[in-house]
Amino acid sequence: MEWSWTGVLYHPGWVVSTVILGLVVRMQRKGSWNPRACPVDLTGKTAIVTGANTGIGKFIALDLAHRKARVILACRSQERGQAALEEIRRKSHNSNVHLQLVDTSSLRCVRDFAHRINQEEKRLDILVNNAGASGLPKAMTSEGLELSFATNHLGPFLLTNLLLDLMKRSAPARIVNVSSANHWRGVVDFSHFHGENLTYRLDS
Ligand SMILES: NC(=O)c1ccc[n+]([C@@H]2O[C@H](COP(=O)([O-])OP(=O)(O)OC[C@H]3O[C@@H](n4cnc5c(N)ncnc54)[C@H](OP(=O)(O)O)[C@@H]3O)[C@@H](O)[C@H]2O)c1
Image (tube, rainbow, N blue to C red):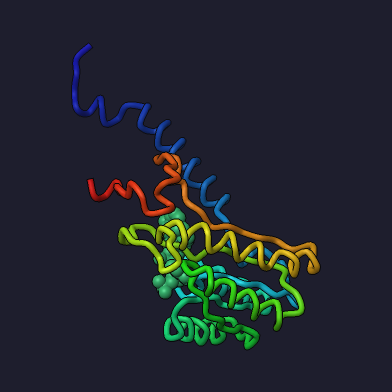
């Protein structure tokens, strides 16, 4: 059989694959998640979102505020937290949004934050452990902990435990840990957590 460009261009295979591609795109569009379509109302519920001044945390806090929850933005910077607070109040028309400062890399700071929450809040229905950072410098905190481990794991773990009784009293309550898939690539070396053998992948 003789080969020709016209034969390739008008081959019925193109029509079939275009139709299949169109159907796949259509199915994906139909299946996409639209948070606004979810009717859940959180009136009377209290939520804490750590790292709520930007990124995923700010989006979560805004969504919870839209649903009429009392939302506490747990941020480490007064300035950035205040800017997010004003934006979320304005966009959600919910004035029951508040700012409390916490640095998850400092266990002392986490304890102070949890103490304030336990003193001031009657209930806690949702805790979103979102604050986190990657690519931090090779460093130890003043409490002798490796900085990334303290920020992403120890701080949130301590915070969750210190708020657990309040959450149990508010049951049914939910704890959401925003995480990453990157842990699959690494191997845990427990000596890192005391500042030993600190050879980071990016440095090598
Ligand atoms: N985006 C992604 O593709 C991705 C992928 C995997 C995992 N994640 C995880 O998802 C979460 C949110 O990610 P994102 O992309 O929204 O990050 P982002 O835009 O960098 O926001 C991180 C938030 O965490 C706060 N934060 C960092 N260190 C903190 C500390 N020591 N104490 C208190 N707050 C602290 C930041 O505060 P400042 O503004 O003051 O720095 C910021 O509000 C993180 O836990 C991240 O590890 C994200």
